[in-house]
Image 1: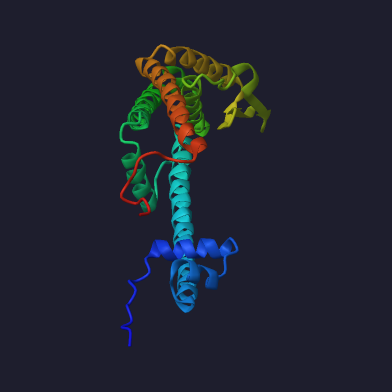
Image 2 (image 1 turned 30 degrees about the vertical axis):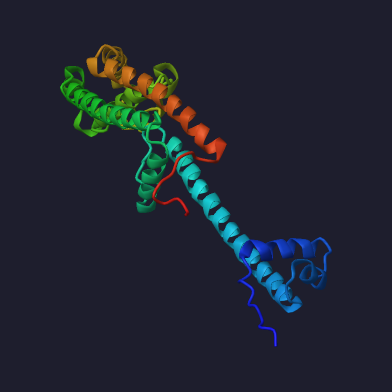
Length: 272
């Protein structure tokens, strides 16, 4: 009796070749005859090759979806990062901090990190200059002799009203925007005899004697001229100008990320 020779195991590349040939129309018996294998072995390994391919395709889909979501997280974060305009709250969720780390690992040499640092520093400086200018306005108006000597006790809303309006003017003008206008925005409406309800734009000053309206107008006009000469005002103008430049550069860099939709490099959160 002839001793049966055991064939070596069928290699993965062989069964994949059988699957390809089968899908191109070659039958398992023909493959078996051509390659010198038992037909049952060919059928078994064709089925096994199908399963291997399905697993590989499934893994590929999972990896592709994970990569798409990862890139989407990075791009969405970059879009939010560019959306924090000056004065906006920029508190980030815990997850955003992880995405920030990931984006920095992907783009460690990107100029966006320098721009973000500059933006934060400028915003802190602006807050400080606004506070300093606000204190200067408050102290100046409270000590203005034209108001302290002329206004009565029942006109207590005038001083805080002027302070609020002047603070508003500083913030608007230093950003290059129009503020309140004495000609159009200082509005008095009739109240009880000898009094008017006075407001400067949004800023309510309450009930004021009619003869005091001119004094208040003069005080406002005087202080609006003064504050434009202050050092704090000049610093604010310069800071807002620089902030606009930095924010534009930052948005331009972030737009490359958000519009490209694929971030080069790798991070520790990249799908394997």
